[in-house]
Length: 413
Image (cartoon, rainbow, N blue to C red):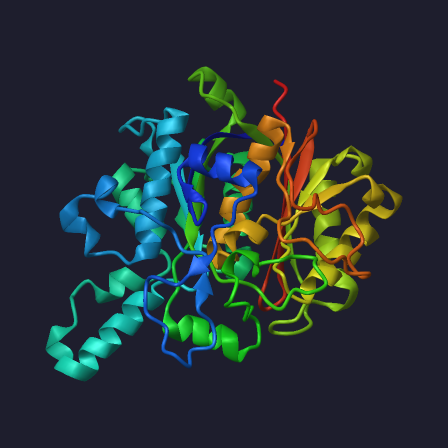
């Protein structure tokens, strides 16, 4: 019999704010974190000038000054979120439990800012000006590695890199390690910070981004007929996952329970989703089967909802899975407020899903003004709504046709 896994701590850095409280307030107020890019100055002819950037973040609050220069921003964010999550959880890592505490914090693109910065330095000043910390700054698994070093966690240590499904897969794989007895506690989630000219230029070349530069806060508009692409964002979401009896023994605060998880592939296209959301539908079904719950008991789906053409295929997938019950489901995309956080999306949206369960409030899909006939579900348009939520799904789908779904449940003992 699989062990039960609960969430005992959460840490979040996003375009909506720093910390659980700031994010909760902005989420339920329906605020947008999208604005004009500040981290670099887009050239006059640069096609995209908007992003969901983190504001007011100071790594010195969370990391020793001498260590900051050894890490790129995605690692800074992950460490900050880990500190917050551990504080909320009350988790202490000691010599007696370190081997049973692990880390899986993934990233989609990794240290692209460091690559761009030091490529410029190399071209201008030569090879001797490249920092010895360059490689550790950019390697994807160094988020997990640095967290392990700084916290003393000596259990399973790994890194998931599955594009926009990274955070969801990281949490799901960490939960499975606990279920099968390989760890008592896992620090898990996703992180990303790649708001750079090269990254935005690349996504723009793929015709993936919104060009609504004249009105940044309305640019991310999932499921709306007038959507024109996603808005890139940054941040991190990290959870403390814990075996239930272990959490009870130390009287940890239990936020929710993970009852289901699945991952699969479309085997279709490098960027486009499978027709009619076939892979996504299978993944949701697999997660529900893993959770051993009736589909009619699901109240809310935190959709992948990127503000692209894929919104209609996700809608079709939800209808395929839930059939008539899809009319009773609340479905919203919190990316309408944050933009798309890529590898961090699944971690941040897991936290938003748990916030919805804990507070009995459905997060809205903001900027929903013109219904799309192909997107005909209840997207909680524009305003949050009070509703008792016992079970919710969090969907994540990534380039390469990779899919991930988590099922969260209100904790009931």
